[in-house]
Amino acid sequence: MLSLSKHANLKSEKLNKNLFFLFYVFPLFVVAQTNYQQAEEYFKQENFSKAKPIFENYLKQHPGDKKTQEYLGDIAAYGKDWDTAISHYKNLVTDEETNANYHFKYGGAMGMKALSVSRIRAVAYIGDIKHELEQAAKLDPNHIETRWALVEFYIQLPGIFGGSENKAIAYAEELGKISLVDGFLANGYIAEYSNRPKDAEQYYKKAIDVGGSPHTYEKLSNLYEKNNQPKEALETTSKSLQIHKRNQLNYQIGKISAQYNIEPAYGIACLSEYLANYSIEDGVPRDWAYYRLAQIYKNMGKKEIALTWINKALLQRNDFKEAQQEKSLILAL
Image (cartoon, rainbow, N blue to C red; front, side, top):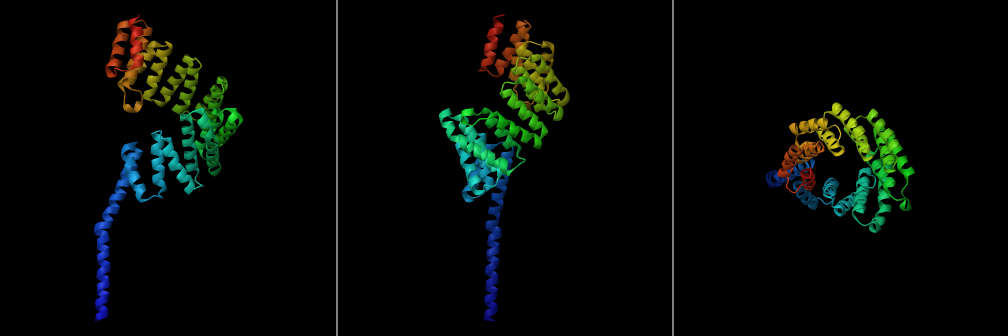
């Protein structure tokens, strides 16, 4: 009878422990998981101020959690807090040396840090940046972002510190094997940076033929603007608008029209369309569209209409410096 009683007591103790876990510990676990999932949702929404403290608290309780370290590194990088981003990414690389993405992010964060300091201090980062990015490329033969970073690294770096157009082209060729359109865009970028606009134009046109994304048209249009070819820029952006129907392109057409004093009626029509269909996702605030309309009417010599639009821009943002300067020009008509 005594052994049966002991057995019953042991079962009772085990049941009590299970009940304790069920009623006290398990709810805390569920809350923690729910909070973490909420932080991930905030992160996806780019609501980093709400996501960050949850991730930081979780990392204190789970110091070795790589996923959380990466989230915090990404949040720091978004806020241009390069030292914090570097610290998180360095820990990740140390813990998992074969992860190409960790090497890419670590090298990229150091690259951005180098751009934010003096040239003398930046030199100290060059070797590490090169090592991390090249290591990422070796670890993942299909890592597009790493190869783009290496293209930019080698074409922008002065030759005295190891910069090389040939190396940049080699990584652009690697890009082309992974993604033909990225290869053309990378070669176009190299040609543009090296002041070979005709070569850049041909590469960007090939990128349009192969991919035809809004980005490919934008690269060609920007090249034309940079080289004082506004008619070609306007034509390229118009083609993109016809195909992609993106409202932001209406603004771009209006901007080109205003800046270069061409096709005023078309510019006005596109800016009117932009304002009629405006949403925050379009990226360019309404006051800039008002500003461009004022520019076009100023170019046409229509002072009163131009003043109406520039005043509307300043009503939305009274510290709009470009609009203040434009108003002075309008008043001088």
